Length: 476
Image (cartoon, rainbow, N blue to C red; front, side, top):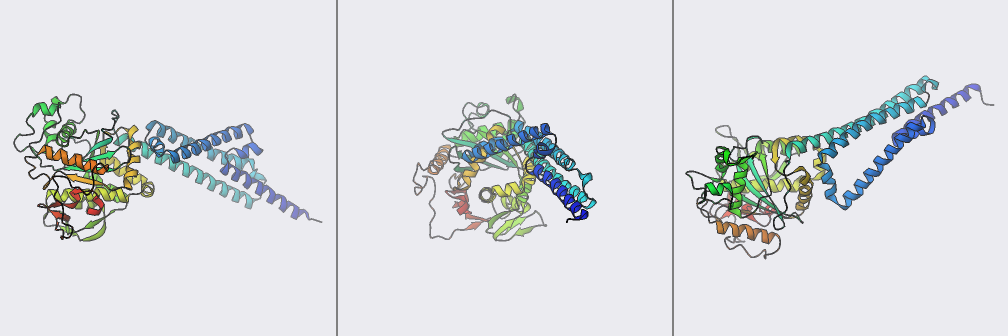
């Protein structure tokens, strides 16, 4: 015969297991505890909300697997992100409330003191887990929304030109609010709208006597080209900043004028621009854990008497070191520096994985918002993210408008430049045999030992390998 004490202990264990079961049920399916033993109306509402959220998540997952850009479009829709953030905050509060209610339904006062304390601990852990996960998700959504609002433009989307999007990348030391600065580097990323295959077209900052886009306001001012005294390509933005009355309604007259110059030189129609603050770029490199580069010669870090060196070898560089690798001119020249900048861009594209982006999302978003300002509308960003992921698996080609292709950047042959750009794009798309060099390109001797100047393979006389290549990564 069972003693009264044993029966009481067994009943206490049953009540404790029931209390735990109700909390676990709520953790797995919110509202199920209320539907089973509490306020059924609350339980039904909670379960319906849970099921709607679950189905919506599954639909998004399936559609994203079938059409990747759909997910990217959602990730850059500020209204959707704002709504999702509120949903996650509401979900954290509501779920925690249901867990506390499940603890109440379990009749904690009927439990022994030991079981009562255990139930409180379990319920507190469940509440903390659920609330922390959902609130952290809300924080990440808020970071993404702030990033989109801070970085991307609100202009009109433009269509591809002859199957390609042409994005002008401008680099300098100023923030995004200082558009009158002289750009330190200018590169057009010409991207195939279907495959993402990319050709980088780099322009030297010291180019002179070049034409502007036909019919543009700059062409009206300089019908014979940019022929004023000491006027170089990187000074176009400064000139426009001093003559803003010629650009009524423009937010960035310096950039607009530079776009007119680049279009006049290359013959490419520019869809969008992106201004990169090179100091912010340092933070981005640090946020992704550094970038691995081939250092071919000692690269000076610093100026004056306080100079250290990044030593030769395949090395993972910090953001500070990478900035100097891309910008150093000591013992080098502008064209070697342009080649090294291409190596940095290609390495970042190749090495930064989606896993790294997710792992360091907050730091990357913070660095990116400080680094880039662009005219790409937020609604178009998903398309370019998709193209960037496609580009990771392909070779990036490059052509630079520097010697020996352009023998005299002070008096450039625009026909030669446009033919070289056109041929590079045609070869990228497979319209020309890759073994056939461009008419203006000197073919490298395969058996010759390549010189290394300023940390880049090649020389000013023969050209730098990374400045004109079908595969920049291999040239670096």
